[in-house]
Length: 367
Image (tube, rainbow, N blue to C red):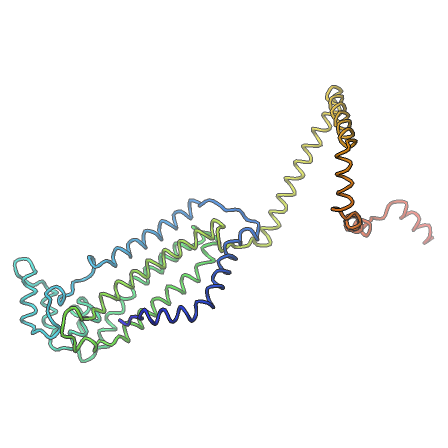
C-alpha cells in the first residue's frame, strides 16, 4: 500500500498548518463554550447513554482485537519463508512441516490446486486465502471474479458496524443526541466502506511480481484487514466520545427547542409565583400575630437606627460624596430608571380596559 513519506507530511503541515490551526483552535473554543452560551449545565451520564457507550466500546474493542496479527488468516509465504516464485511442490512441502502430522488441511489442498501460475499468487496476496480457496467460479484469467466473490466478506464488518451505529444512536437510547449524530456517523461509515472498496479494487498487485525476498512482499490483504478493523474501531470510539460530550453538555451543545424554552420559562415563573405566595402567607401570619408583629417592628426600628448612625459617620459621608461625585453618573442612572418605568407602565396604559363609568358616559353621548 502507498505510504506518504515523512518529508511530504512535513511539507503539508508547514503549508496548511498556519491556515488550519487558528481555525481549529477557534472551533474548539466555540465548541467548549457552547454550554455557557446557551446557559446549560453539565449533566451526568444517563443509564441509557451508558448502555449505548458500552455497546460502542465493546464493538470497538472487538474490532481492535481482531485487527491483531494473531487473529489474521495465515500467510503461507511468511509461514514458510518462501519466495513468491517458489515451485508449488516446494512451497506446500514446506507448509506440510507446519501442520499436525505433516498433513495439509482442506484449505491448503484447495490453494495448491489454485496456484497454477504467478497471477494466482498475486491474487492470493490481494484477496487472501479464503477467497482463493473457496471461490467456485473464479479464475486467474478473470481477476474481477475474485473481487466480486470477495466483496461480501469485505462489506460484512462495515454492515455490522452500521447496525451498531443505528442501535447506539437510536432515540430509545440516546434521544435527540443520537439523532443529531446518526446521519453524520452513517455517512462516515458508508464513506469508509466506499474507500475500502476503492482501495481493494484499484490495488496494483503487479508490484509483487518482481519481488525476490519474502520481507519485500506487500501482503495487501493482511495490511488492509488490519487498517479496516482499526478504522472501524476508531470510528466507533469517536462516535461514543461525541455522544458523551453532547449528551452531558460538555461540547457540541444542542440548544433547546422553542417549546422547551417556553416550558422552562413557565416552570421558572410557576416556581417564582409559589415562592411569592409562600412569602405572602408567612408575612400575613406574622402581621396577624401581635407578638411576631412587635418583634418585626422592633427589628426594623433597630435596623433603621443602626443605618442612620452608620450614615452619619464622617468616613461614610465622605465615601458617599466621593462616589456620587466621581464614580456614579447620576444622570445616566436617572435616564435608565425613567426608561425602565416607561417600558413597564406604557403597555399597561395602552391596554387599559374600559371601566363601567366609561361605558355609561359613552351610552349617554350616543343617546
